[in-house]
Length: 166
Image (cartoon, rainbow, N blue to C red; front, side, top):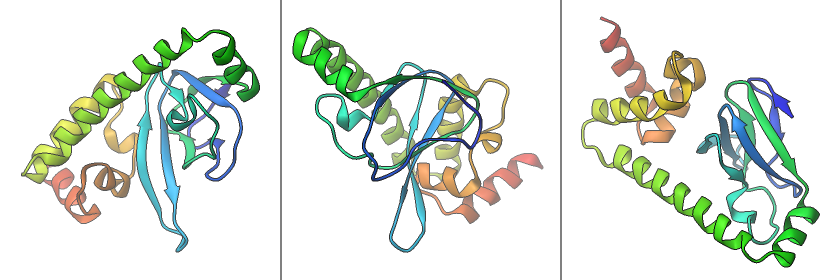
């Protein structure tokens, strides 16, 4: 299946299939009762999502939205969980996928624990560059989302980006 920028793969609170991202980037946003949304994750090629449903089904934690054109395989839940029951060796594959995601999250923690806001932004941009090629970070995420991802206010992100352009 092909998704284009801005298209939704699944919505928070629904339950259904799993998905494997082959190309592109997805963002996972969580909606709150007051209508605000928070960027909680970025999904990169090779990941199978939702992570929390790899072993047992659960509702989607957030809404998955394409940041760029994406190629995605739909993995019907019934087939996925049936394959797990018939072939326990799939659990090793799932464990490796979750290990890879944990390592990616360690990189995010490194971004968040930088003291200087500019250093946070530089680390985030370096990490994203491996996935977005020649695009600028602001071509893919809003300043608000960048701030949410690295623990800065949108105004701070705006100031840092303007200073860099000078």
